[in-house]
Image (tube, rainbow, N blue to C red; front, side, top):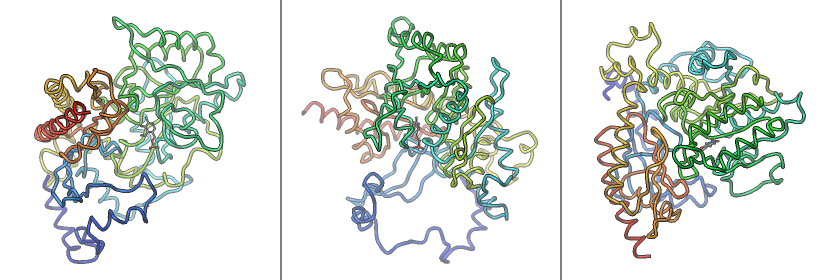
Amino acid sequence: MDLTHVRALLSELDGTCLDPDRPRSAFGPPEQLASNGVLFTAGSAPRDIWVHSGLGATVDATVVATDTPLTLIDLCSMTANTILGINDPWVKLKQASFLASSQPHYLTARMGHDLTYRIARRILGCFRDIDDPDDYVVNLRQCNGSDAVELALHAAWKAAASTPERRKLATFRGSYHGENLTANWVSEHQPGRLLADAPDNVIFFPTPEPGDAQQLSASALSTLETLERDGDSFFAVIIEPIQWRNSVHTVPLEFLRRLRDVCTRKSICLIFDEMQNAFGYTGSISYAGTTGVSPDISAISKALTSGHGSLAIIVARRKYREIESPFGAKSNSGNMLALVAVDAVLDRLLGLEGAERQMLPAWLPSGLAAELRDGLLASAYPRAVALVDELLAELRRRFPTLIGAPRGAGLVRGLVLLDADGRPSTRLAAATAKVCLTHGVYVRQADTAVLLKPCIVLTGEETAVALDALTKTFDDILRLRDEH
Ligand SMILES: Cc1ncc(COP(=O)(O)O)c(C=O)c1O
């Protein structure tokens, strides 16, 4: 995308210490990676790929060990859920415009700014529930998904303060809600425990599975019956609509509907952990928009800023608006550039608001201007989903014994890897996530599956390159499987 006018402004930085392309260190990539052991903790160090630049789903990189250039197709939205891909021009322009002004770069929760109110109104505009007149409120002051999960639980807990018999929290096998202590306690996918065992009021129900002929499985029905019978002892239920760490398992819609019903009847707070599906990945801003099933509290992060700053939020029905002090406003959530990013991401996904459509700069590339008028959810989302559908179908045709039926929904997809006996294999999924980078595509392991979460601006050419890279990857994995 050519933004010549903006580049002309920045040319004043060329050759100065502010030149963004100037090398920042005397060391090359091999020396830098060699110092991982003395610089970083485990789990946080870069590994084998060195990145130079990127646009959309395409990342220009080098394989450090061999010094080979690598064009990498990012099919996992960089883990931060960069729904708009890398270097979205509109988000960058809006941030650049804000940075060039004298607007505050940070604001503590005591101080107001027009942007905070604008974002609140825009997000709440996406959360109307036609079945319930109780409006939603928003907390824009969390940093990570784990914070938002914890705050959602605090809000539900506080609302139950006057009913001390409501002490239990329902959660599900296969869940992952983050890495802080609270999120740890309510997730199945957590390796360790810290300071204390999980509290005895966290009840793990089986993963909600479909049964035969579109019905629910016996265990899913039994969960609903338990909540129906014992509902008065639960203050909340927390659920991910798509459990990505559970081999990208989509909770059956019928289960969500019936869960909503039982929670309403029993006055249990229904919390959706929407870290993975919100802000574009299933075609709407929230899963309620995709399915018509509305939570009492939605916890969202990641795709909110598309990777342009860290921010997490909860959107809660008004009756869950009380938050016990001192919770509710994390220090680093006051970064205004993250709010600018949310505003820009909403522009991109939904299209510009009313009068602003007439106010686009004349020099903006016509493709970008058209996208900003229509919104990517209406224009690009169906195209991106069709590309992914076709990619997954073709991979299954090419590797019928290695790949199971695609899982997930929209742009949150999984491919289960099968061993020689047709059983789902974590070993092969892990090997795929490792090998894929060397062939030029990034996917992540999700238990027995690999997770594919491409950005909404994925192109046909990128998909073709990804197909080629995944074909080479699965050829390797097939050899590995059959030699074993
Ligand atoms: C479903 C879900 N919930 C919560 C989190 C925690 O988010 P964060 O890593 O931003 O704390 C994640 C992170 O991957 C997630 O996938």
